[in-house]
Length: 224
Image 1 (tube, one colour):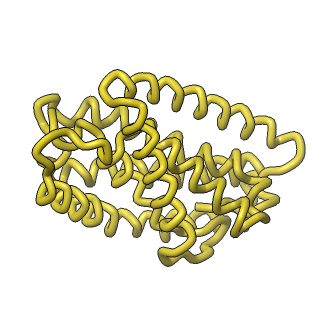
Image 2: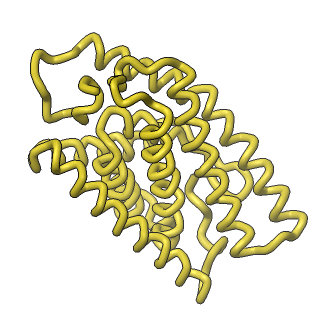
């Protein structure tokens, strides 16, 4: 979902700075909540895992340009379910930054746009999970319909933010709108894959269930 340089530029970037700052502030709030249930070492370790896997998702997994952006298999829902909201958010932000700094420097001017696009939908599925997943259900026990709801919300949120930035930057011209539609149609195909990846990750986690609490995953993965 790397939005191409030039889609938003000049004075319009002020909004991206603001949304990214809001995302950072909310990530701090989630981090403080996370630290009530996990020790600092676990939080740091899960954040590093999130950053490393995000880099793999962006740089190694297949990705291709469509319309105004690129289609990536971000697997944000998988990161959320395995690592927790705060480490997933920090991992996405750091992984995107590492990729931009060392492998795709032309993307760095759009970092605040892209990080907003990644994190805001993550916050949505965090809220959604609290509402639709019963409090007595561990994540490893989720069903396909549960993860499909989360995946639809995350991927739909990514598409909505990309569309917003494109319209904000270039307006409602026919060419711009056609690019948005083509990107959205291609990106929502990810929804066919992500729930399967989520369930595979959860099945693996269930098979490897540790005897006690582990620092590698969020407590909610195994404990309701």
